[in-house]
Length: 277
Image (cartoon, rainbow, N blue to C red):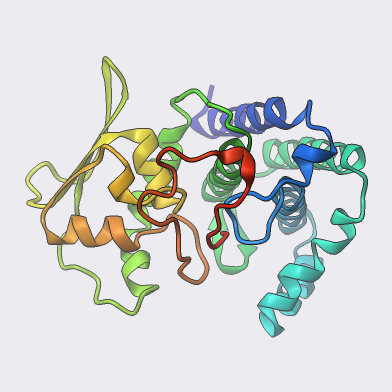
């Protein structure tokens, strides 16, 4: 099996894992506030459904996507609100089915596409592999908001390696995005995926490093946890700065989570607030 085909399979598995969490939701769970400011679980799934459809449009109808991106460029805040409104008007069952149908269609489009091609997105164009990885990252990150809300525990899988890699590649962007000079050197990353497996990135001779559980690393770089609430170990000023401002996704810098936000919390209350992706 090709690396690209395996990546699509991992996206499908990540989507199915989130579906397992929300499939049994009643209206109470769908309408409970998540840690993302003002967003319920309905908003989270609506967001995924819309951008899954946008990714498919980018692959299959780039001219239509260009018109959609133009609207987003004109007024990003208004656009992000407007695109969710039709989805939020659906019943919970309708929204869930819309997301399911949309992701099946997106997976088919990914499998039918030419792996070496590039396609437009909100910002620079993306390779197919990067686009699939971005959808996987978003599914996992927004799924974390939902899991935190209902107290669901999700197993650590090797799928997190895709998110860790895109997060490492985004290190320069994380500094540029904050108006901070990009460091002249990188950061060595060593993450435990399983008791007998480690995922590594970067030159082993680099002075700055980050090590610890891969889940913690992905939570920090998708801004779902503050580094102070994880088991990550940082060495050097570049690594420490990165773990404070880093983000694996495009867009303006988010506020992320505050220290202690997920320590002895009661996620069912839905009172935790922070900035969404």
